[in-house]
Amino acid sequence: MERIEVRVSDCACPDRPHTDGDVVYINAKLSALGGIAAEQEIGRGARNDDELTQRLLLSFARSEAVGWNRTERFDIDELMGDWTLARPVVIAGERYIKAAIAPFQTRPAERSPTGRTPASTSRTRKPTPSPSE
Image 1 (cartoon, rainbow, N blue to C red):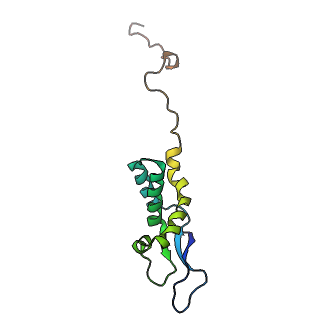
Image 2: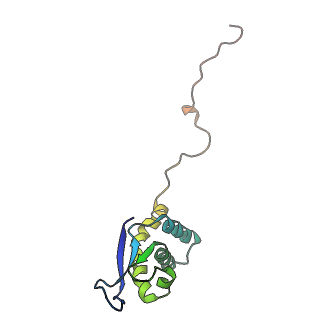
């Protein structure tokens, strides 16, 4: 899966700092895990759009951040526990909002009204001969 680099800080490597800084890798597209989490957040409802956006962005940061270039093993809780590192990743989550809400913005296909079909559209029956004929 294609990944995007989100720069979160200057390099903290003690001996050999790299010039590109510390980056977190996020999925280029909203993953199934992220989509399911987003639909659950949308289904929970929100008092307003700002609250929903906040919950979606936090959800995306947790589901779509998949690694980093730091020397220690990637730990989502460590990332989310440090606002300085998490902020750029949370902001990058805006890229997924359109994909997450798209299923809720499409109108369902027009359905025909329920009930009996008007007589004019009913199938005409061929006359059946009576037993006396």
